[in-house]
Image 1 (tube, helix red, strand yellow):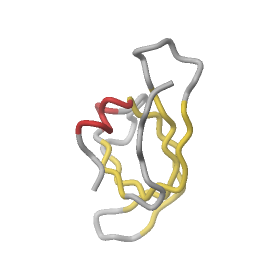
Image 2: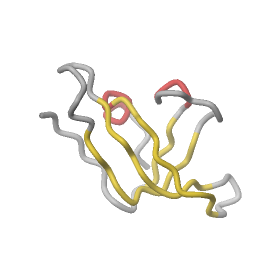
Image 3: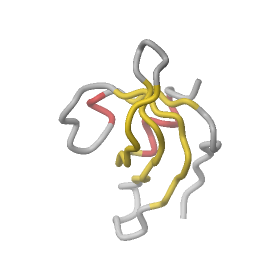
Image 4: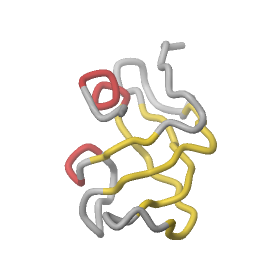
Length: 79
């Protein structure tokens, strides 16, 4: 298993290129849950990040579940 630390309540900025199936561009997400994806092969580490989308105005948007590669969260994005 791998180690990823994403705190509940953190705000993540996730670029479209850093996630699977990026249909709507970058996302700011207020994290309410994190789930590991155990069915992937080693070295292909993904997590589901669940939370509330935040608009640039600061207004809350809909709930979302976004599949993000772990390496992208280690490099940046946690604010």
